[in-house]
Image (cartoon, rainbow, N blue to C red; front, side, top):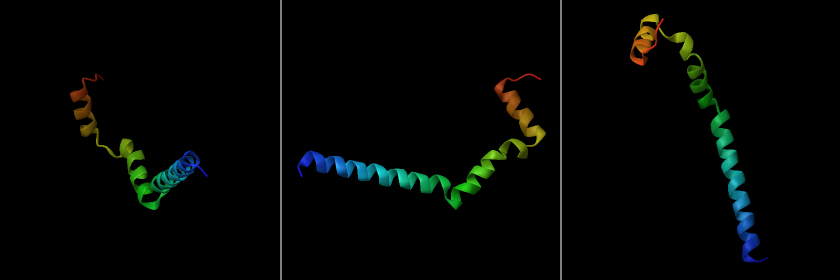
Length: 61
């Protein structure tokens, strides 16, 4: 086995491990609460807060 093939094998293993870590981070139990909170941000805001945001963005009603 020459050095080029060894480098290719190690790179493939590194990519697979990185991909697995990203999947665990994205679909883990800790991240589910974060995603649920982010999904409900639209529904949790007060109307006053929304008006203040609209005013700072220059949005018109």
